[in-house]
Length: 231
Image: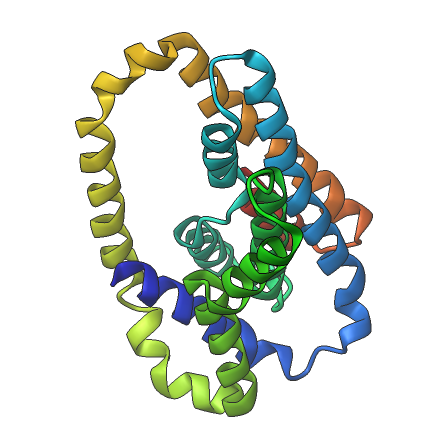
């Protein structure tokens, strides 16, 4: 339920701001987001598979966590930028959706070995069209574009003001789940887990900031793209 709240709120907020932004302004940033979204899971999956301790399917599952976007983290970054009066592009949710879409397709490509090509493309269509993240973010974006900023202002108190408290509950739940799985660290190596958990997000974040600079994003946009890639 909490993930639905964050995904729909992110789409509504982004869609309400897309009305006044020409598509030509978003083309390069969207391309960069899709590129890094597809690259991260492929590189991570190849690295984990080459390590020899993970199957291709399990490596792809781990790599998908690095490729998929943390909506809560992006929402928190956008809230912090707004609090600090740092301008950022209104189409950041669209970048997150494009990155999520590219990452999803890349993960499916890495695990296609057991499926025929017909089944493979059918699986891509089902996951892309009916995946919860894509459906909620894209659907929320369309609704936000249709209602505009005036329409979003009517529901903003439901999504903006309670965000901090709901985000705390969400992070507490994640912490509880992670604490219950601490015993699994011995199966994969504590040092390796810590290294991948710290170095991979930092590297992806630096790449995201560099791509944001290449796409001529604002200071807030560069930071947010780095956050998207690191999350």
